[in-house]
Image (tube, rainbow, N blue to C red; front, side, top):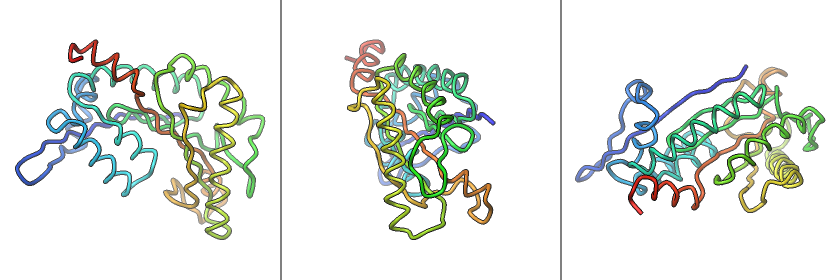
Length: 233
């Protein structure tokens, strides 16, 4: 089932501390506030701190998105562009889980869109068909950087799973490159058994954990365009 969620985190730097607003309060913000909220007080420095801290606590896709925070009016412009791209992904790719986080997008391609058989990193025909749909969105939104993370279930040795997860991420990057997405936009990383999104105690849960996640964030061009649009460049 497709899911589109929106999260924003607001940073405020005081003399010796940083405080965060509650999730409930932030979810009620409008799109411009969501984009501008992160780093509005502390700028990109606070955004980077939030990205690193949350990335360590949760997962790399989330950390990658929050690590690219700009903040302020410029962040609001970027956030609006990412709102549009998130909707396009949700409408185009069946089974994708789309989360709008700050100024970026966390995207999970799980068992209903891009999954892998046990001990394999080869893309299935179904996976390729769904990636083809994602290619269309990426081509229509060229001013983003894309971090790709591969995952495995918990079966097998940890070292083997780490290698396999990297191969899965690279398989996705290779296929996207073959379809015309610039390799310079993409980075890959294998995460092994980290950050399971379902229980590894069942076959169904293991299938969900054999997945790929994306962290999509503004590249330098989008940031510069947003600065001009916001009148701060």
